[in-house]
Length: 297
Image 1 (cartoon, one colour):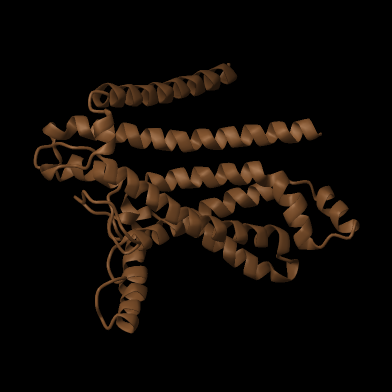
Image 2 (cartoon, one colour):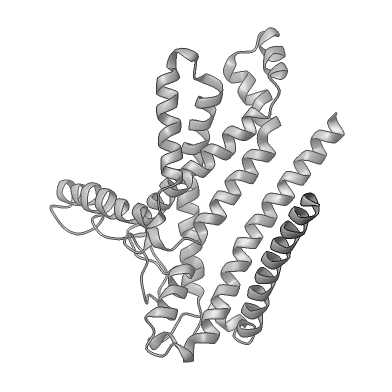
């Protein structure tokens, strides 16, 4: 009897969650489809943010994801490889310290990363660069695309480390032992045996981390996002528009929130499409890699 009750409560909770998700998606689609036109996707916003499109926000989000990926993914992947493949028992304290730091960073609110980026990257490193190289002229000591990407990279590094390390752990130790027994070095074993067998998990976790970062707003509030910037960023030291920040501003700071509701819902629809697209890419890569390994076996 208790089993049926638990099953019923679980099924009811699952149905409720699915209903909420479907309701949100349908509401967003119905309210945003009217504004989702080719002009909306390719034009710049106009004054007052009540007309025009979101092209600068799309491009800014794309550039932010590129910078975040190029910085965060290699660091997270290399750290995970070290923790799982190179760290020895003699380094147990050092490894525990790294894992504690990773777990702590994973639980830090995203707004704290934004404050960290403002204080460390902009006011300390950026201001130091300007003082040393530009005689105090403002170049790097201000919110810009590069510092926002660095901040987002630090936000996603813990997710990348955990996902890559889990993927590496799923590779059987027999494959490592066989490769080493045949005379391969540790790096050759990792490069030729471990990484190819863990690639589906690595790619899946990495893309999921990127998709999470693409929708974050709080870290870029202080580090580079602009309220109204119809031109595209021309360099890493320029500010940029972002889809998530665009939605936040239009829903809270607009002079006429009611007049911009259609644009808000359409922007949310675009951001959801990008996020779902990244998740779909992760699923496809994982499926294709698993089928490839299955055919080889």
